[in-house]
Image (cartoon, rainbow, N blue to C red; front, side):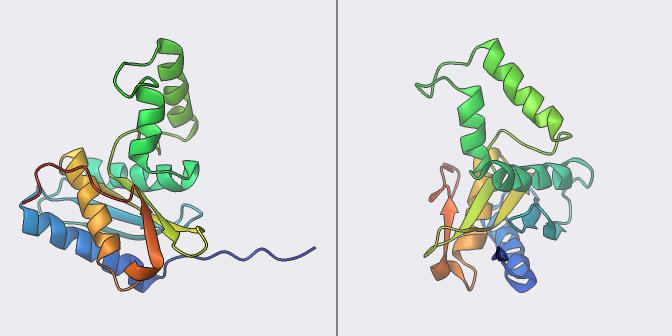
Length: 173
């Protein structure tokens, strides 16, 4: 028998990631966002909401995006692609697959999101999941851009890797 140890981003790093995500949204002129940073067990470390970001929906959605990442060990974009697009990445899925994702989300009390904006964070050397970031309030690709920017510009960036690795945002200036 042995003890299992886990790694997690710290409060200071989580706060820095959230602040950098807000900075990215402001610098790009995106709509105000809400950010949730979680540890690998799905416990919230930091949540921030920009002035002007609706206070009811977007904090919950950002939390659902972050939770999706640690729950299924992938980005929320990848989770959505698995269940909302056919194997070719273009065609729609059948009703049985769509029903499966709805049942999964319902089983999780609605605390999962099958669309972009949730980013998984791993330790680069070991591949161990150390947290996740969920962003909501701008367009989905913009949310994902802000989450990725927060991680890639934090002080631990050289020790971390994200899923996805790069953003798909076409509105970045």
